[in-house]
Image (cartoon, rainbow, N blue to C red; front, side, top):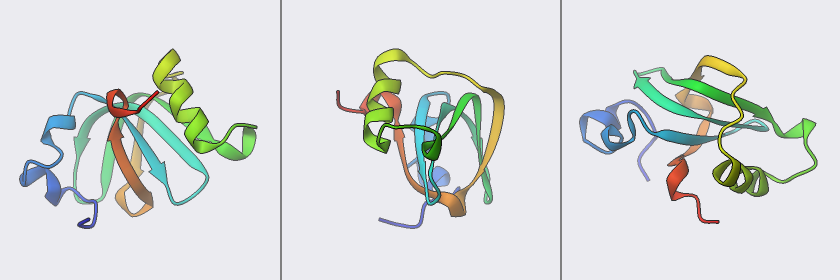
Length: 98
């Protein structure tokens, strides 16, 4: 897979995700879910987001993502900027298999 960055938007690889609820897996112990509102060369901006620190949870990353798909995003941030360098994976929440 190509490096995940904003250049993928110009290729159409991310454009279908704008406005959609997405899940970002990060290098650190965070899962971030929210509505993808914009991207640039440095950041992805999510609105109505849940920034979840897995160290504060007894569930695994996968179980937390499945629970978010089932129950919806538990919003704790109106807006959050996430550095692309920290993102390991990006997917639409609707694509999470439950």
